[in-house]
Length: 190
Length: 190
DNA sequence: CGCGCGATTGAGTAATTTCAAATCTAGTGG
DNA sequence: CCACTAGATTTGAAATTACTCAATCGCGCG
Picture 1 (cartoon, rainbow over the protein chains, first blue to last red):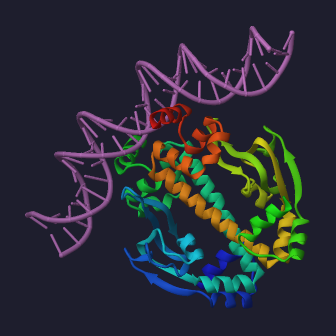
Picture 2 (picture 1 turned 180 degrees about the vertical axis):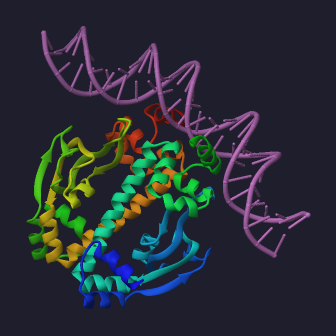
């Protein structure tokens, strides 16, 4: 796990053993069970999490009471309610565990500490944030320009491993279609 | 303009006069006319821009040849093709000037320079990037959970000043509906 | 075995798109 | 200054897409 995380960071910046040891010491390991919350609506968000292994979904309940899935997080992804985390406010979303998972957690103060002490890590997070923006932009574009069928097909080709692990209901919500519609897409595909 | 930009930055961090002078010296002023490109598809993206005054739209032409508007940028907003800018690749989007505009431009090397030299500015950009992520997430949620009518109403209440300045066509594209549908929403609203 | 939940299917309905035509509008050249 | 044109907007009608509600199916678990 320690090595896996190092690889993750070193995809973007490189660190000496000593630097890495120091950085790693600011993270805590946590095991999460299915149906538990990593982030829970209306509660404060102490940490940002890196998923060692497992699966989560971030969802938001809208004004009509409908739960919409904003994002999934699997091995090697970061997740939290960033808005609440950075602003020290209460979460507006839930992050729910879908399959038994292990995460590394980083508190806001530790995050600021290592960013302040290490230009490299500040850079790492900056680049990650930029990548995340680019990914969001792509998702927006996808929602704007593709219909249910196309969105589903793109999802399948982009995240083949998730198809197995997620319920159809979750996938439908992530894609912004009803369960029934998704089901019909499934059968007309082949 | 110089003062306006300072205010923009100081909404997030505070700077001494000296610090600000130094930072400001890394920006260049540019005037843009209607229909000109700030960023053009397939070209390299040298700068990120802060809009002093004016109006732009960022758009992407999808596989079906349909132009989708990803984002608008008005006074006090930043805009560029971030993906291309950070990765020094060619733009995949166009950023088009809608109304005579003035922008401040910052090159990637200058951006890196001031981030490296000033923790405060690195912080500023980091926070901006986070805010941008949060905004994208909200837009995704809005696209997932609201219908055309609701999206349009939210747009009106969020950006009342843009309603005047933009074509209906652009607004429709931004909201992910056809021009005709938007037109009909308009009349049923009263 | 039977319950409960997720997934599928059917039928009818609502929302949105598409295509076509009619208006309206701003900018251009004479 | 006016006529003209290209583009933008609106409107109508039909077609398509996706949703809702209801019923059924399939399957794992107690």
